[in-house]
Length: 79
Image 1 (tube, rainbow, N blue to C red):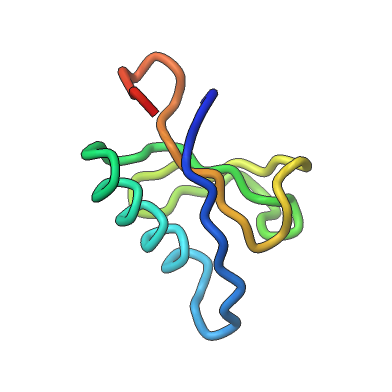
Image 2 (cartoon, one colour):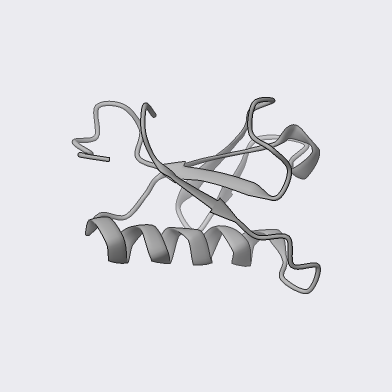
């Protein structure tokens, strides 16, 4: 993913999967496409994970409580 939407959510009351779902919903409303990839800080995720059809990957450069969400390379995403 070269570009995407950076989403911040530090709410202790919302679980991880719901945070990804909210970020994906906003992305889809804004860009008209359903995202399929999300990067998060390794402290937020121990292993690869899928939430609502979105692959979740750990990336050291993403700050905690941030979600970099978008589409995988080659899936035709303009964003």
